Image 1 (spheres, helix red, strand yellow):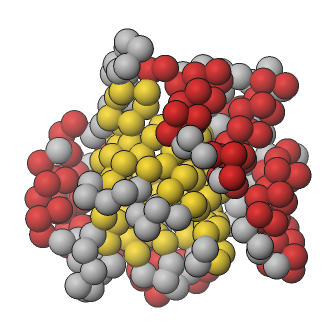
Image 2 (image 1 turned 90 degrees about the vertical axis):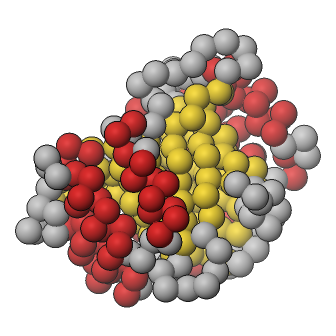
Length: 277
């Protein structure tokens, strides 16, 4: 039996605390998940993501979302761009990546997938920035390729995107997950996206398997191999697994980051979280 993930604002760095408290202040229920990212920079588990239906913001959704963007010091040009697309979004996701990066995603196209061998549906438009920093923000587009809606299609797409993927821990984990879905009869319980950054060489994927209702523990062997490939020390690896193994495996994001270096992020434990307005 999977455990219920317990999360409080005090689990995170100050910027993350402020974001989660602002979301809780809306007084509505939203989905909340944890994650940990592994890359050449080490391990970062000071992270969370929140999923809100736009209707949760009430009749003044645009005004309340704009106010939240302003409170998070979202760059004005990005704020205007995202607000102009808000009518097309059904869900708005917020994320935190410690120590001080904030993310927002507009979910745009899941309800109207495009068909055709070469078709790709834009699912998310996302922005990531450091509040009150001169660092340039990142803007990402998440696409669902029509050909990647089957396990064999997703495998093929991974091979196409990452020609040298045999040496990439993130791709190895994704392939292990797809094989596990087939073995457990859950081959239809996934959603595959490929991710591109505007003006940067990032090329990555996101493989979501929440519908399969599997736990992190079901992939422990593959995750241990992943952590070893990144040379994560054993005590740190054991701590990550101890914190996550009892929770639902959500999705894995990986591939090449903005600096062209392999990374993997594992998201887990999505659960309803109630605000306290």
